[in-house]
Amino acid sequence: MTTDTTTTAATAESLLDETTFVTDGYAEVFARHRRDNPVARDEKYGRWMLFGYDDVRQAYLDQRLSSKDGTIIGGSLNGQSDSASNRMLICSDNPSHQRLRKIHSPLFFRSMLKATDTATRQRLAEASQQFAAGGGGDLLSAVLQELPVSFLSLAYAIEPADAARLVRLSERLIGYADPRIGDAERPAARRAEAHLELLTAIMKLNARGAAAAGCPVAAPAERADALAEMKEQLQQDEYLYNFLNVTVGGNDTTPYTAASFTEYVLGRDTEELAESWARDRTGFLAEVFRWTSTNAYVQRRALCDLEIGGQEIKQGEFVVLWNYSANFDEAYFGPGFTPEVPHSRPHLSFGVGAHRCIGAQVAAVEIECYLDWFFSRAGAMTLPGPFERLHSTFMRGYTSAEVGMAG
Ligand code: HEM
Image 1 (cartoon, rainbow, N blue to C red):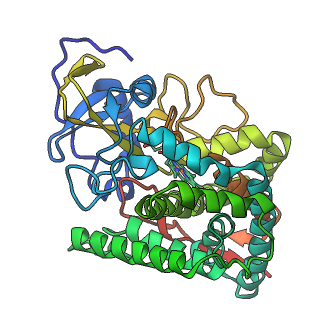
Image 2 (image 1 turned 90 degrees about the vertical axis):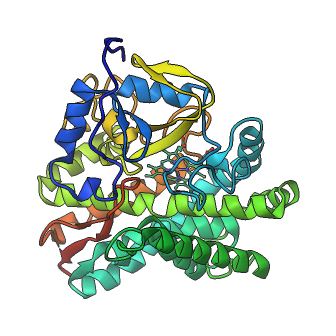
Image 3 (image 1 turned 45 degrees about the vertical axis):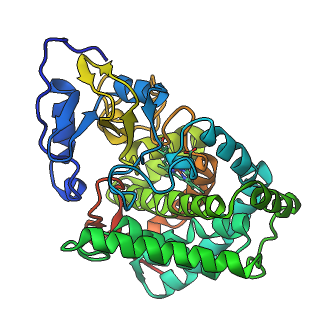
């Protein structure tokens, strides 16, 4: 996107506070930025922010913008860089990133996706029996948090119960500043505790060794070799950091995507949307990911002076790429959920370029399982009120999702 180069870097109101997505009217604030101030500075956090689709996409592809100092504000315990820099996928640059990506790609083989599909459908069916028997309740904890369990269990050869525990710990990490599941008064301390809890749990599971006997679906034969080879090629800290990356990357995202979608659909014409899902599953899935935009932003750091949209970004400055805003850019997308309209640009929910979400296909499998589950039961489900939104700027999530369900 080109902007008049005479524009000054106006200070935006801070959208990087943890309350952004719990505040009514945030969509209008982002829309205003796209229109008036598409490349703006957040003085409170000392960061540049990109709001328009073209700028965000271009920034993802720009090698002068580095990931190695952390892609989430506060994602590391050290604010200026990341303790796992160049040792964990998400916060590494080439050549380290290429190496890590190659080593991890066998975990995402087609056979793993197939096993994940079968196991996830089984878990959803079991969870729904209890949920319906109780007349409904918190869909998030009772059903949606089942979505990431099977892949994690199959990929890392851990018991589903242990994978489920990691899901809960990861939820506490992402929700560190939330008054219900974190600590709004001491967010930094809570984040440190949550990091430690999660890493300790991962280290213990790793020390215990492979044991996925509790998973009803067998992992593909090549998984054992892939895991052994990964351990051989990675230093132990690299193995653990990336186990953590896959855990956090996969654990909260699909449950929140499913929750967001459910809240939207239960307030509308479910049958029409079910027909649309049946007509074009691929298009529908893409629209669910665009419209939910669960990972609201990623962060990069300038390796040299550069210019974006007429603004000069200095070497060492941080830049926030708002996926959420790009996915609603009026140049390419309307404001609503429109699965029938092929958009002129692909959504950016999984990012684009070298760091594009390595788990995007896993996410697609899990949400596909959920949509089949959901549409076959939607007629029996009711929405008593809005879901409780998570206090997080990074993750557009929830702390609970109350739904009624007839048995
Ligand atoms: C709705 C679901 C998901 C969304 C919206 C999402 C979003 C993203 C985004 C935007 C990135 C790019 C980060 C960057 O460029 O800095 C990313 C990377 C990543 N995601 Fe996902 N993700 C999802 C599901 C998953 C799942 C299911 C897994 C694992 C099973 C996963 C694991 C990862 C990992 C390990 C990376 C780092 C990749 C790299 O840096 O090479 N994600 N994800």
